[in-house]
Length: 261
Length: 361
Image (cartoon, rainbow over all chains, first blue to last red):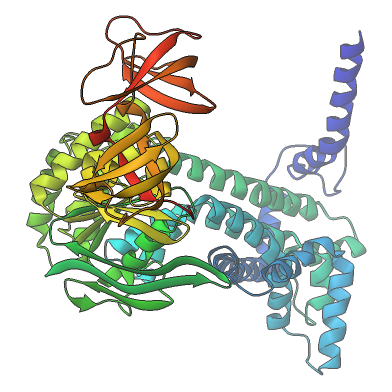
């Protein structure tokens, strides 16, 4: 009896969480010109309109470029920072580590305003570079957390063995350390990309005039009217932000089974 | 020319001195063991030879050339680590080939030399597997193959047997020695296990608290320990306060409580010049128990009581009481062992004893 209740309750919670998502996906295939029930027929019409909407396409391009650049820069910096913090004795390593992780702990709005005020103080104008910098600051902690955890698990012995066999420190990094921490590096890059692609709070503060990312574009469109196009856009976003990490995970798993578990 | 020469090496970490001034020469093809408890500086010394640590003072030379400034990857060394340290993302063959790729070895030769190395360690068929698919002992053999395939100037072994099971450890010990003999590579072996050190080495360097206690071949270090530390660390020893009466006719005579006067061969008491306080070192294996009343010639006999019996399979370790002192004796079991509370004759041959100067330990 008690368990039945728990089951029912759990089901209710999940329904509450995921029903809106399901509704968005479902309505994106609605033929009606209102983005709401009742369904009048099944159609790809809104996806086609989406694909022809210049503003949205531009936002998509911006988001993808921004996300990729954020991922590359964040991952590179994150790997370097993790290496320094884990492999070398850096004075004040604990403090640096805390500082690097801090952006997760500080509310995003605070971070966004702070960066904006700081740049205002320096008389720097808003630009795409600034937006990118903001995203890097915001995604770096995730990369560092993931990569650091992995690096701690890679024994120094293995690197020392490689060097004793004649590999220079750089060759050791590319031959041994990097391949061994690749799953974490890939996970970090995926995190960075998805977080950047998803982000709206910071982006609203940092983006220069005329530049829209997908989330800010949706936000702007919602202010005018609720077009069914938004449902279609939502579906695409869900596919990207849920599908990419799952894909990454699957690839990582396949890579590790190939190695005999 | 010696293969490795350490000259006045010192290593400090801040205020802590890990290795006090130390000099050592390792001959070409020699098998030298650094033996001591953890924290004695043996691994630090090995890592300095490897180039993984810089000595604070002193000079390290390999084949007559100073290598202090030479980074590890240019020293041409083979290192085997305690935890194997195989590359998990490479196959066994790729692991073994790794060092060859950084040397001018033609592609066709690489495959042949890898196969030769795998045959040397008696694992010719595992080249395609990943390290995880092998047992601990097999992984350590691969690590050894990877270290020797590059024909290193010096082979450094950092407690390579410690991670293995007891049975496997003894097999690997024999195997390791066989391979070292066969390829004749100069080897420095670090261990805290005295039986490994005694079984494998040409020369043992006993270390304690960053200092070298004694350097010598296994028999010498075992039979004539030069300090109380060495006597206690290698095997079970009974150490008795005694007084030396003098040195004459190749014998040093000691007056030992409970046992009376014992004439120790002078070669086994090299540090005792004349009369004065001394210590008698009695190996537990050299104290024989017998039924009361037995007294062979050329031996000293005292009466004692068995307090505790520690059965070890083919041998028994007895804890004895003689007067007010406790002793250890390790005897092979032939016939029947003694039991707790038995009165026994404790027999000791003076030529099996060694002596150290007394006073400060």
